[in-house]
Every structure is written in C-alpha cells, then in structure tokens.
Amino acid sequence: MTEPARHLEPVPEPAAERERLAAVRRYRILDTPPDGMFDTIASLAARCCDAPIATVAIVDSDRIWFKAAHGLHGVSQIDRDPGLCASAILHDTPYVVTDALTDPRTAANPLVHGELGVRFYAAAPITTADGHRLGTVNVLDTRPRDASEAQLRILGDLAALVAQELERRLSSICTITAERTMRTGAERLVRTLQRTLLPPALPKVPGLDAAAAYHPVSQDEVGGDFYDLFPLNDGRWAFFLGDVCGKGAEAAALTSLTRYTLRAAAIYEPDPCAALGNLDAVLKGEYQGDPRFCTALFGVLAPEPDGSFAVTLAGGGHPPALVVRADGTVESVDTPGGQLIGILPAPVFGQAEVRLAPGDALLLYTDGLTEARTPDGAMLGDEGLTAHLTSAPYEGADNLLANVHKLLTELGAGVSDDTALLALSVPRRAESSGQEPLR
Image (tube, rainbow, N blue to C red; front, side):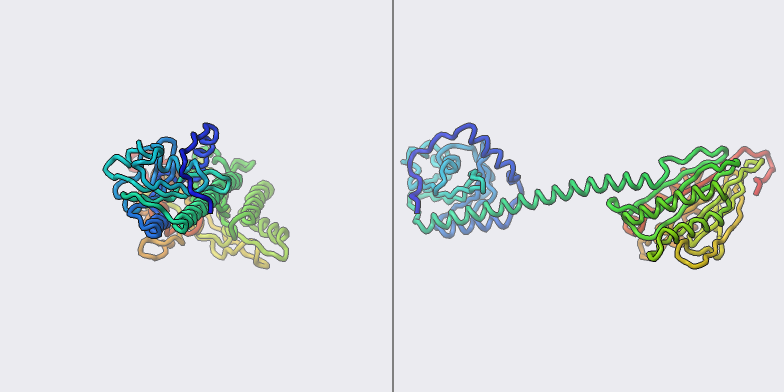
C-alpha cells in the first residue's frame, strides 16, 4: 500500500484550484440537506477507525463544509485553515497526522488549539473520475495515535463510495434537468400548435358580443376541442364548436381538417345540417379503414331589424347549447337526433331555431365541462351547469364566460378533459317604461 502522506503539504496551483472548485460546483453538493447515505458513511468511518469524530467534508474556496458529521454536533462548516482537510486534498493518498500538536503541518490550526483539541487526524480524498479531489472522508481524535493500513484502506473505500454517490446524483440531476428542458420545449410546442388550431381572436360582430376560451387539462398534450366564428358573404355569421376523438398529434391533424372543412363548407352551403354532412363525407374519405369521428354544433346567426338575432343551429352528437335569457332563466337548445360525425353509415343531424333578444346569450361548450366531477364525486351534468348559470348573473359574453371558467377552476382536479367555450350575447338596450323586451 502507498505510504500515507506525512510531509509538508505543497502549495496548490491557482489554475488547478480553479478547476477543482469548478468540479465542486458541478456536483451541486454544497449546502444540501442532511442525507442518510452520507451520515452512514461518516458513522462507519468513526467505527472502523475507533474514533469519536468523523466527517464527510467538502472543501470550498473559503470553508470546509460537512455533508455529514459523526460526533460533531451543531457544526456544519469551519474556516478553510491549512493542516487538516484543506491540506489532505492536496494529496492523492491517505493523509495522516498522528499528533497535531507537534506536527508542523497542523500546529497552527484552530481545531488543535481550540475547544475541540484535535490531536489525531486521518483522511482519504474524495476523488472524481476526472481526478479532482473535492474533499475527504476523515476521522479525528483528541489523543495522539496512528491509523493502521487496514483502517486507511477502509477510509479510501468509503471516500470512493462518496465519489460514486456524487456521480450518481449528478447523473440524476442532469437527467432531470434535460427532461425538464425537453418538457418545457414540448409544452411550448404544444401551446403553439394548440393556438394554430383555434382562431387567434374572434371577429367583431355588429350588434353582438362574442367570447371564447379554452381550458386545457394537460399542458403537454394537444387537445381536440375547437371553435370558430366567421362572416358569411350575405351579412350572416357562422359559428361552430366541437370535439374530435383522441389526443396528441393525430387529434391535432383531425382538428385542423375539421375546422377548415367546416369553414369551407359554410362558404358554399351555409345550411348548418349541410355543413355537418359535408364534414362527415370528408372525414370518411380521409380516414378510410381507420375511422375518426367528432361531435360538433354548427350555427348561423342572422341579424334582425329589431336588434335581435335569429339562430339556426345543427348538432352532430354534441351536448346541447344553452340560452341564458335576459331574466336569468336558462333554456336548452336541443338538436334532436343529431349523431356522431364521421363514423356512421348515414348519420342524421338535428336542427333547431332560436332567437336571441337583447340581453340574451348563447353558450356552447364541450363535454369536459358537464362531465367534470364536483367535490362530492358526482358529475356536474346538464342540471349542475344550468343551476350554476341560473345562480350566477352575467353581463355580456365575457362575463358569462368568466363565470363558467371560474366554475372549472373551482372544480380543479374534478375536470378530467379539455373544455372549449363559446359565448354569444346580444347587448341589453334601454327600454321604454312598460315595454317588454322582444322574444
């Protein structure tokens, strides 16, 4: 075995010390919380060397920091004075001081003359794979003595174990950091992709307030909910909201196809049922042998001379829209018989007519809202949503949407699916005394 270092320590070279300190920083060990693994190593070192004190020490630029200490209570670090740990890391072999009081290397060290009264010190360097000595596994005693070769070998093994653990932890940190970076990049990509599937902003419709929102459950997965509002070439306006099957890239492709198919269909044939029929044919043609489907509501808004809007609404397997009247009552706009789009041989799409008078609003939503769970575990359902809308007065589309979004936020973990929302409201108008609002 190599003879322990017992000569005067060399002076560290500035360049080498800078590299060593960079290695200390690289392992991110300084000032980390206590750890049972390192505590056990310190305890084993004390036992194998029959010493009252043992530490796992990291040598910083101006201090000795103890990752673990046995028999040294209430002390987490000391100044970096030469003679003990600061000197031990200058050697690649075990470092031994048999009598610190008479040894010229340690005679001036405060631990020797202070309350602790160190007389014996033995240490093995914690050496990284690239040769940097970060600190030591060491033992101390208050009486002069020597260490056997077997004891020094054990200290060396324990120091190697510390180095291995630091490498393992650094590898874990690097892996976690890389995963977080990738996750951040993926979330950014998902948000960008999601934005391309939804209109950046809703257009201004004369005499109508419009607002939309998208409430995602996951930040790292593209959802399949969609909505849109756009003008037709005859003074009317078309709108739709729906939900495609699946998640991720395939759902994104299906969503994009669905949205632009409906926009194109409305230009050539603005009849809502015809638009859904056109989408059904496109989906079947695009996904032959591998069916893909969606649900949707498609509507057309026609402004009336009295400031109201006539709405024609067609549904294909989608939850019904809700009308929130000016007096606070809530009505369901059913489209009876509306079936899934893109999967049935000859689907039927139901249609309904409704009028929005000043003060009225129309709310469209995807099933992530009504399938959400309340704190007692029950599904919110159509009745729960209606009760919430009835008890939460609104003023305009933005306020109506804010009330629904607040409900989603309160349900929290009870919301298990993405939710898209589209609100269309006719502003209230001043009414003459005794005059009833038009219906």
